[in-house]
Length: 403
Image (cartoon, rainbow, N blue to C red; front, top):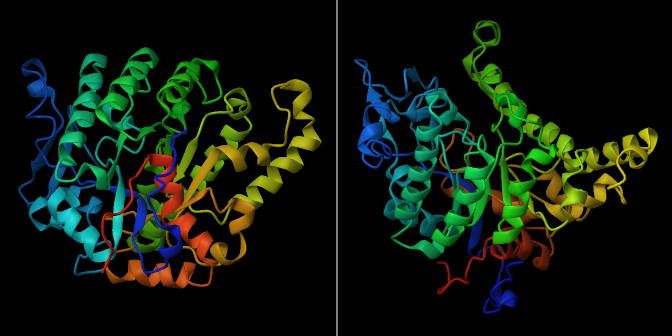
C-alpha cells in the first residue's frame, strides 16, 4: 500500500491549511477524440456540436447527450440552476483548462484534486453507445492518454483517475497496467455493471480486474451515477408535476442514494472477503447513510445466516466496509460532528465536486470546511482534509504554505 509522505509536518496542518479535493470533474474540450483517434475512426469519433441555438452538445455515434455541456460546468454561473452556460465559450476556464484550474486551486487552498470525467460517463458507460468494441476501447485509451496530457502543467497537484473498458475484462486488465505506468492514481469502475448487460459486481467474472488493481496497488473508484440513471434525471412527468428545479434536486439526490444501494450490493457480494487487499472509494455519495447501512447489513447478515451459504464471510459486513471502503463528503455537517468515528476518521475524504451544479465553489469551500470541520479534533481534521487522500493516492507534501 502507498505510504504517506513523511515530509508533511502534521503538527502545523490546521483547518486553514491546504486540503486535497477527492472529487472534481473536467469539462472535456470538444476535440479530445476527434484530434486523437486513428483516421479510420475520425468520422465516428465522439464530438461536440453546436446547435443553431448556440447550445453545445456531445454526439456519440448518432446519439446526442441529453445533458448539454454547460451542465457540467455550472460553478460560478450568474443565474440559479437550471440556468447554465450554453456552450464552452461560457464555461469557466478552470473547468476545462489545467492552468486556470491551478489558479483556482490556489485561491481555495486545494493542494491536489482528483479528476473524474463527464462525457464518457461516471463509469465509462457512455462509450457503449458507439457499438463498435474496437472504437470503444480506443476512446477509453484516448481519454486516459489525454488526461495525462491535461495535467502536464503540474502533475503532482492532480490525481488522474483512469477510465476502464469494463465491458471487456481482458482489455480492462491491460489498460489498468498501462495506465498505472502512465501515472494514473485510481481505477474508475461501474458499481452497477448489470445495468449494461454485464454480470453483477460479485460475479467471479470480475476477479481479473480486482486482481489487477491489487497488482498495480491502485484503489477502485465507484462514482455516483455509474449505473443507468437517466430515468432518474430525465422524467418529463415529474418535471411537469414538480418543476424542473425541484425535480433536478430530487433526481440528483436519488443518485446519491442509489450509490448507497450499490455499495450494499457490493458488501454482500463476497468481493470484499475474497479480496481483502482491495480498496474502494465511494465517490460523491456522502457519509451520513453509512452508519445506518452498516447496522442494517449486520442485522440482516445474522438473520439470514449468510455465512452458511457464503463461507468466505468470516466477519460481519460492517467490518469489511470499515477496512476496505473510503467515502467522500462535501456538503454534510451533521455526520462530521456525530458519525466520524463510526464511519472511520481514516476512511473519510473531503471533496467539492467542482464544477457541477451542486458543487462547493469559491469562498463557500472554506466556509464549509470551517463549518463542518472546525470543531473536530485537529488530528481528525488533518486526516479527512489531507492525510487520507494523500496516503491513498500518493500525493506529495505541499512545497509552500497556503496564503
